[in-house]
Length: 232
Image 1 (spheres, rainbow, N blue to C red):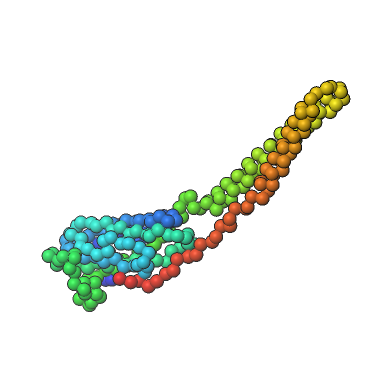
Image 2: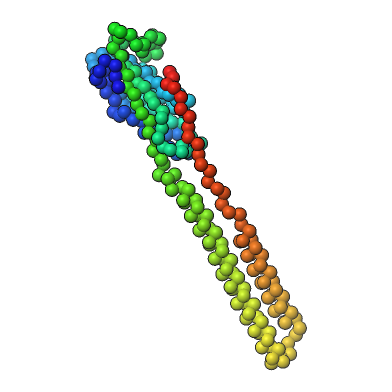
């Protein structure tokens, strides 16, 4: 949107700033502004959320028929927004300045709206894009947790079955020895009984450990970011 009608002073490559949101990582988007005149064009960038974004450069002068890349960086976010529809806005102001103007020493009233001044304003929306890994992160966490629990239970069951088979085999050997009235040293029978008892205790402890494992922590819902007025 411009004052005076039409895109006369500059052209911009997009009317949206698209940021891929990933937790605890900054994201940036470049905006190309091209001078469409034979004059020096001064620009200034404003935003409704100055604490969330870094804009470099936020002011400057574009020579005739030249272009400038403005990089806007979204600071690292600690929570995902509840909805990915962002209400943040950017405003790009452009106006012609004399050829010898210095971008570091632009007058304070350079971008003031005055009747005899040519000033164009471009409103730029912000769009959030969910990171590909985030879209299914909740499902993946739950699936991985369930898979780990199932594997632990299956391992415990396999160990239990093996212990039961071994205990049964030892008991059968003891019964066979008794029936045949073979004369074996007392230590042999005692060793068999102790082995069977130890295996039973191990199986009980293993099952108790698996069944007492805590469930995975719940997934908390994030809160949306606040909005504010456009500030310089």
